[in-house]
Image (cartoon, rainbow, N blue to C red):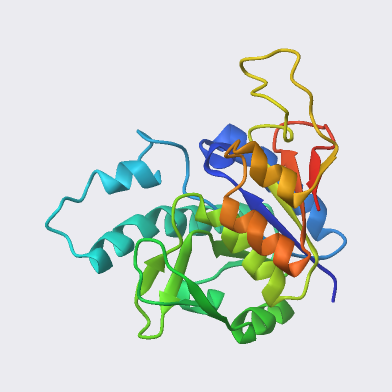
Length: 239
């Protein structure tokens, strides 16, 4: 089967209007292939289910395990909400549980190291569904406890899923339409790259993509196509 992998950041799904763009992109992809969607928590700090907002619900008295469970709720809510909207559009979608995602880590609950990828569940589910939604940022340790992959970890999840399914390209959608040589919000003359190397991407320190994601993509020869959710521009390819 052919399969495409895409990821949507929190600002791409922060409200119903913005989310509809993401839903339409996935629907179009599903016409020609299976689709695995990696999803972030909705919105930014101040929005109800954003990671930073959830973090403020806890305090120093929580254990690391409890904090990881708290922070994972943002992606869980996003994945199920996105799945519900896809089904409302008549699409055959399923939101994976943390266990079904198959990303196994060590016991570092706040910034886990991935030690194993188990594709058995996701392969089985791809046979039954046209679209799968995976929670970004979240893994599980050997005891089945929730761990998190660090800030921006949903980008990393995307290339991990690509490796798991032996797919050599992912599409990452965000609120910017590519990678620039300077901040386009501050410099109207900023140049957008059509293509950029992994090394150059890392040297920019622009925070558009998670460094661990870029490093993993480089080691495993996975192309990253960064696109704007709300733009028709071609975006930037990192390869």
